[in-house]
Length: 158
Image (tube, rainbow, N blue to C red; front, top):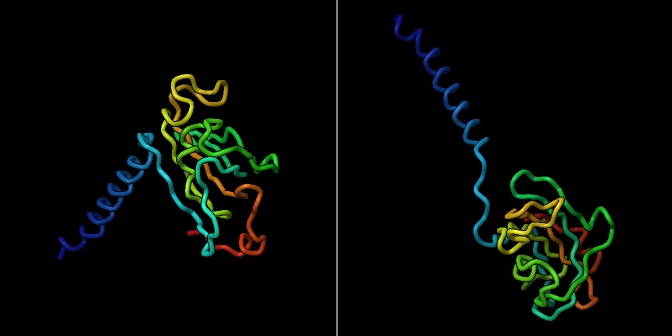
């Protein structure tokens, strides 16, 4: 009978050790991506056109450092999407690749390795050398054609 009185004590010790181990695991630094990672957060059900090289597109984005989540740029803060032609090298390679085959209104999370971002040179002072980057993106328009505002407003995240 005295043995059973130790069960709650042993169980609480085991749970405390498991919690401490989980907390230590969560504090370990994540390895930066070594290749482009594309996460689709939302894709419209009706997609009339997808991005391809040569398209002029408008994209809203929020850029953060992969290492610590520090935000370094945001078109949303400025209230104006970035406009550029896909595949012409006017943006980082991770964008030229990661924004292909996208629908207007689609939202993606891009995790971009340093070699597809700013590489060894970085973009001082905000982006250090060899920094992996994360971008939350939303395609606003392709060749000047945007989404129906109601479609975009009523979407659900994937």
